[in-house]
Length: 75
Image 1: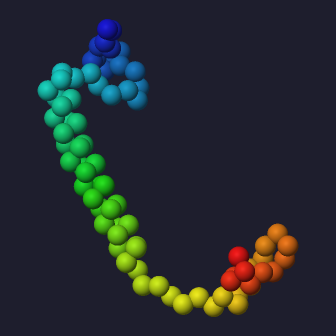
Image 2 (image 1 turned 120 degrees about the vertical axis):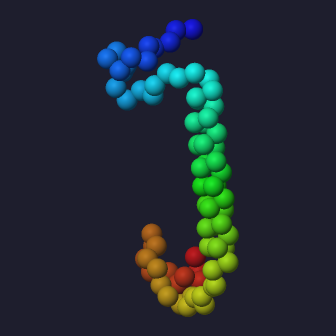
Image 3 (image 1 turned 180 degrees about the horizontal axis):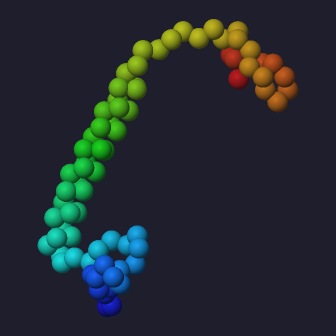
């Protein structure tokens, strides 16, 4: 396996630095905490969206389809 030297003078722009396994694991563990929090927040938002109250719909409202206006109920 080849490795890129961790020398700023020779490092490729936009590439992450080369670190030892312990440093990588610590960074990965921190990121995992953030990822799990992000997932929980997304799940909470989705649950709140599902709990939104419904609104009665007037099915006689027409929408324009490929064949012209169509009552919403006929869709």
